Image (cartoon, rainbow, N blue to C red; front, side, top):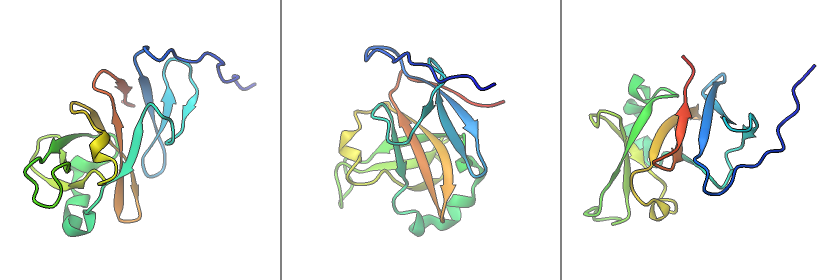
Length: 139
């Protein structure tokens, strides 16, 4: 017998709560409030490929970018190519992997949480959630 997905919908002012569920190459998302799967297209979250990885391909193998690891989003307002640029670093800010895609960076307000989600085709998908979101990780 399979549990039926919940029909409960979170209120807009309700804090986002997600569970990460381990997959073959990364993590799937589940709404901790309802138990429903959360698709990458969900408007409450952003799932983006890290841009510019090919310039730092050796960094991709660093264990600090393994799926499930917290990452640092670092604005670069002095970036000569794009004043909206937001760099993606490991949590300790010792290794940079690349950037939030140019078309997504202006949407960020600062303080968002970033989590390595999925390794894919020589790149990395990153989950970006609001600062107050709760993200549970498998132990």
